[in-house]
Image 1 (cartoon, rainbow, N blue to C red):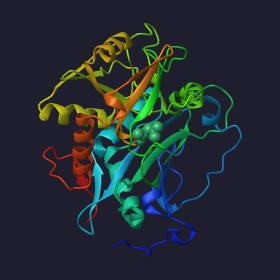
Image 2 (image 1 turned 60 degrees about the horizontal axis):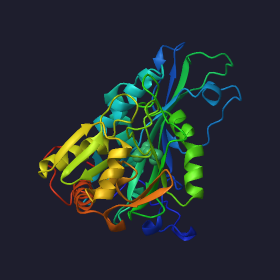
Image 3 (image 1 turned 180 degrees about the horizontal axis):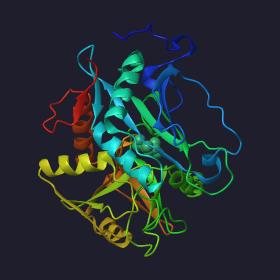
Amino acid sequence: MGTVPRNRPESEGYDESRLGFGRIFTDRMLTIQYSAEKGGWQPPEIKPLEKLILHPATLVLHYGQEVFEGLKAFAGPKEDDILLFRPDMNIARFNKSCRRMCIPAIDPGLFMEQMSLLIRKDRDWIPRAPGTSLYVRPTIFAVDPFLGVAVGKEYIFYIILSPVGAYYPEGFAPVKILVTDKYVRACRGGVGEAKTSGNYAASLLASEEAHAEGFTQVLWLNAVDKASIEEVGTSNIFFRIDNEIITPALEGTILPGVTRDSVIRLARDMGYKVTEGRITIDQVVEAAKSGALKEMFGSGTAAVVSPVSLFRYKGTDYTVADGKTGEVAAKLFDELTGMQTAARPDPYGWVVNIGK
Ligand code: COI
């Protein structure tokens, strides 16, 4: 059991089976300040979750110098288990995003150690209901109170924790997506592959318009050719055309997803041909018309493996897999979540138990 008594708001209707995503937070947070003037990283602190007090001129509020990550901690079969899924990849991506945003990288060992310490302290918040986990959100941003456009000299790195269920309101059921050729998310040389807040801000208007038309998400096309497919914004995207699984290659505009990488490996080991390459919306439309498009699904830490039941492009709707979850998406979802919760074997050594 954990080191502190349970402090979850059961009395206020806390219900593990109806968590949704990202509205409930645990008792504590980790902070590590960075100050160029004081010689860099300062000692880590784990303290009660508190509001941040920011000067109105704080750099990040004006120029967006920020990076974040998302990973999940799972309960396992043993009382003591706290299972993280490929945390090394999230930490490496965090530092890669930091380099792109001119933010100091953090020592990966310190990151892992302090994150594990925080999760262990708040372990009683790890939900156990099927489909739930403790979402871990590391964040860093520039805090200097300065109105010039410049690289910050002061940063706050923090980690907060949130017990979560499914990301989408649909739960793990298939979602409808709108292919936009009106807006673009990122282009080569930009910050599309960094996990930085501006990418998400750039997606909001398109998402709002998609929601108003009854779609859950937007599918982004390449900013230059408006033809090749990029990603969904909250997840990477996969297509099964006949028996080949295709996903856009990493060419600097899309997020290099940890779940994307895992899905590619799992699908190959299940015997499917998986291609990382260019796939255009016209190819997908053709495949949908001919019946060759068997499945379409997103992959992401929050979204897991998220089947697409329908997409709309240039005003025409295309139903995928008869509007149901396809067999490959279902297998991948089960394999991935089974491995993450140690209900299934992990031949890859992806799951790290930090519970002891
Ligand atoms: C994640 O999948 O963890 C993300 O950070 C995506 C975010 C839109 C929730």
